[in-house]
Image (cartoon, rainbow, N blue to C red; front, side, top):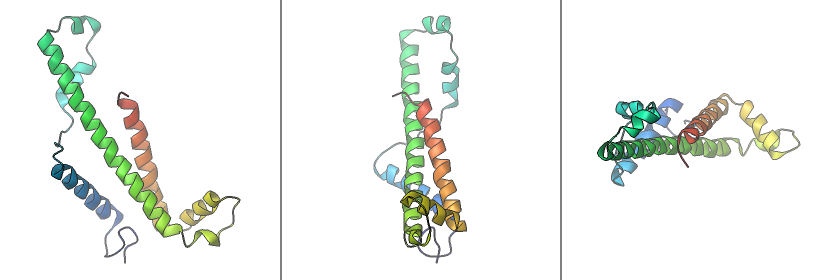
Length: 145
């Protein structure tokens, strides 16, 4: 039995790939387009004020459209990482709930962290959670509110 997926002999990496594939299929079924990062967008990030003033109305409209697409792409990336983090947190809860009482600590969180630290699988899973949180934080900095 696999501690990541609840059954079978599947690695953590394979399970995350299966989850990502499932999420992509869900987005496709919802009609959400698969927009990747557009390399052309980079030129717009480095325009000077003078260069911006020289753009025509059509060029400004194109730029606005491409920037909106890029924002959509960043949001999808953030949503993927949020899904990974939520999955990792849920799996950590399931994997540690029966072990938390075996540890001493002032708070439930201290006992939970001790239970995570005492198991190689939960340590790896916690790293997935931490990594996803770091990516979410980075993406949130890039997206306009």
